[in-house]
Image (cartoon, rainbow, N blue to C red; front, side):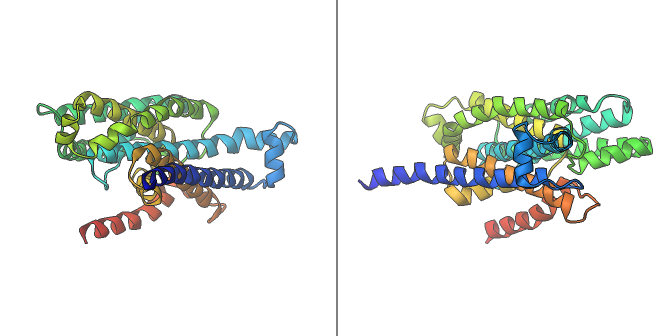
Length: 336
């Protein structure tokens, strides 16, 4: 009887938390869409979304604000899921996609395009950043291979690759023209200002494809949480599963970073907050981490737009202001 009750609670708690996060996300989305130099009330936002609003309001909503809001939302959700996957793979609660060199690899690729090929369309940046992140993580995986991989080796090699990529970014910014360097610096700060539909649609597609893959792999992450020896003893094919899950996490984080820039700390914070809300099992952790990541990113972009208006603060700066103290709190809590 008690076992059945505990199982029921394990199902109800993530479901209830997911419903609460969905309501909060809808509220933040309406707030984000209605805020700006041309304010819109919630009824006006809803009417425009349904296609029955005024022409001017619909233009502002669909062409200017909705792409930006969706970019922030989906980038946060993707980073939250990627963080949960990476923390599960490395069994390190302080890990994030950045420790595998992904953020730095994507940044180096996009900055190279902005500085060296300034005439290229911004729509190409998500593709370039995506493959840049993949190349960086591929180097980490191959360099960390010693008759198999280990979480510690991947983290150490990832930090080295990230440092090398960051050196490349610094070199490119030093030699670039002023306008291109300014544009690259804004992107690196984690800004979704000026994002258009052609940049958002690939992010939507990648999220819809990879999120179900991450959720399906939740049970494998639960087994990996027990340790490599235990996972092998339970019959898991360790390296193929680890490689597939790593590919899913890299794909999600790469799509987010290549669209929204190097937004820090969401991949670290979202899984931690989700874990405190519902516990360890990844079946509930992954969707809740996605919701938390979306809330943090959307809230950060709204705060950056409104707190110091007309000056805009990039979303990545706001998440860093929130995330750095949170990281130190986690670190001291872990040590104590």
